[in-house]
Length: 240
Image (cartoon, rainbow, N blue to C red; front, top):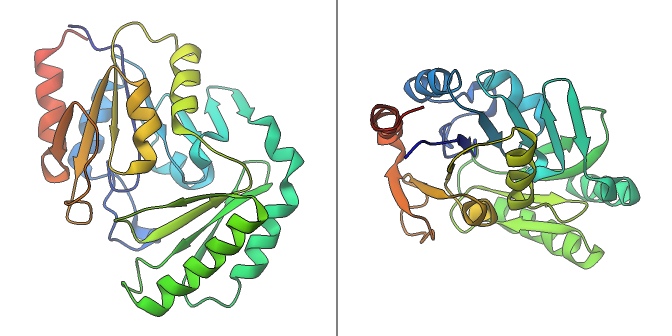
């Protein structure tokens, strides 16, 4: 079987989830093999992170679907989900409500600077219940305002977007834009990757110490510490 493309999540999949944001980068061995594979087939990153954060860290990729698919970048092209322009004020309301919380509030902005969401992140402070309670309170408020809230059962943050964002839609778009010819492999580590797993021909669940008890409906399960070896094995077995 000839693999046609490899699409991947970022946090907790190709990059460790328990490092300070400023030090976040793909695991070196994983980055090396993905860079090599990108010379043979399309490699894309599909993430809830903003493009200005993830693109410099994953220069090997052909394309990026950022902010959970609200923004897609490939080559000189840039596509934004049109509905975000109808609900821009909602994200600003959440940002104001988040100020003063003793945790990291990541602003999810398009490359144009438009705010489309926030991430309430307590990974650096640890699993303190007061921080989690504060994030849950803001998330409940966002629910009442009609925003799209992504809660993770195992990961130390909550993502809030002004409109519903779907990684499956992003995978489907990128498959067409990159003219993928052959089976598409998708790598992910959380329930937020579910729609992307469904769009892929081969779904790979990446496990680590934070999601051990999470049941992902995937074709293959690989520990993050073995991901580089898995990709090298895939490269050796396939005809790219």
